[in-house]
Length: 418
Image (tube, rainbow, N blue to C red; front, top):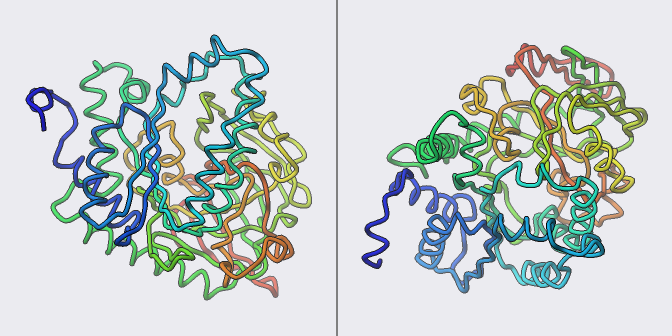
């Protein structure tokens, strides 16, 4: 460490930041000795990335390769880039990542950019760029959603993100508050976070074991603005917390996580549902989402804010109007209790039950690692360039599991496990 680095005063607790880095490597990834690692992160998250790299090499990593993004550079594209550039993406980069994942390289993403970064930019350009990026990323995304390798996402308290969440505070105080919220949600605000995660994973495993034992045919949701039946894919499997990737490594893909989730049947969703929290998507806040499903497909969609962006997302491809995930989260989860809206799906999805438009996860099938894409589709799994979670649960949500013979078994009552 240089003298300059020692003199920097930061509102972020360095001990907890180091714990988060250690948890990312030892719990999130469970990085194997000799395994390579690719990291993507905003340049503002460099203090966390440095610590992650240290813990990765201490754990025996082969080669750690970071890629950084920058908010000002991103904005420069929208303000000065030629129009035709918004229909392109760096496919060569994603092809390289797909090749790396195919060679058993682990993947770690650090999030922390301003969630509203692109809110003032041309919505059509944002939509075009997102679509081009989604298409180019597909080779790498398939390795991630297929759970070919161990991967993980963690967060860093970027200044713009912090000011969005705590607008009445100065920048330093806002960053400190967001950092504390991240550390609490990520379970590193204690003396033994790794043991804490072991206990938490065991509790989530109890939930998935019960749900897998029930073998429900469908779930029925009822609540304000919601009367929705979600059929579950044939041979679906509930997962949550720590899971085993195809390379044999047990990892926690999301830190934090409070959910247990599985794959819905892409053709068996009926009824209407309303969002209970805003969705922050690529710089746009989409609020009061209300959609209606027929035969698994969204046939009507509204939102009080961001409706144009929502409809552009739904037109991404055929699978964008169908579900790829259904997740259960109690209303009493720590993130829900915090009362904070993070404007970031990694956190907000862990405050409420949610569904995801788009691509399904192959790991959410019995023996999913052995199923071909055609077999997954035949069992009801959805395919799409997108995967977007949005929240539909609250303290007024009831959920029943429906068995193959039509019996109803309470799963949630008033937002809590029944």
